[in-house]
Length: 240
Ligand code: MN
Image (cartoon, rainbow, N blue to C red; front, top):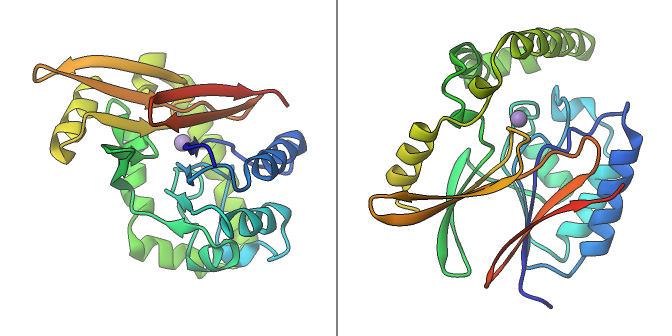
């Protein structure tokens, strides 16, 4: 087995884009048994209104189950699929991680997160996030009939689309000061996240030391995967 750890995020899987689901299934098949771990850093699904709303034989759940049987697979919630829960974990064998976690990757402590908490210039979104990440709010939402949850999720997506259109581009990106605060707070020099759909490897100096922030790409037009090897990161696109 080659020494590599895989990272993906922001697939936004949705019935309206079956080619991306196919690309994801092919990716899992091809990488099966070839990596030490797979980390999915949020927004695997375009929307997730509760584990009970998805049939257990849904193809991506089954594919994840097969994949995780040989390769440890981890998930951090995104801003679209934050309601993924324990039943999903049981069905897929995927382990759910907290929203920010430091993992030792080939000897380098690395902070992993979805990335939406870094976008602190978008104050309205951060307020919305606080509401929907509240366990009490989530219990109330999950108690609603599926039809009603679907309607509310659709409404939230269209409002979020309008809100994002109203903001300048830079306000939707990670705030560099927040990035630095988080990296200091967690005592790391490497951060990997998604969410902004701006794939890049950023190097910068902080407290006299080189820091690295790796941003994963989305899967709208193509796939995007980070292969982390002991010698360094390799951010790749996957042709559909
Ligand atoms: Mn996101």
